[in-house]
Length: 66
Image (cartoon, rainbow, N blue to C red; front, side, top):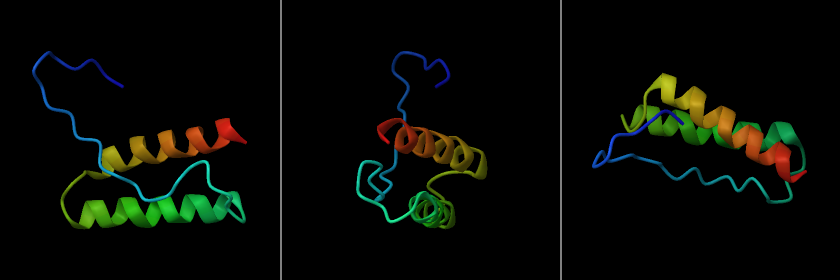
């Protein structure tokens, strides 16, 4: 995460794809994350750049618990 100045609000939207659930495949987890992030883009909650950062973090978290 980049440096955040004191008093600045940071948004972390909920992605309803638990990284520590028992997914049938890693691809299924990544698909869930992609769909959720695309919905957040469509609702103008996050940008495409933010999608990439959230996706990378979600994938890394899932890989770390396996």
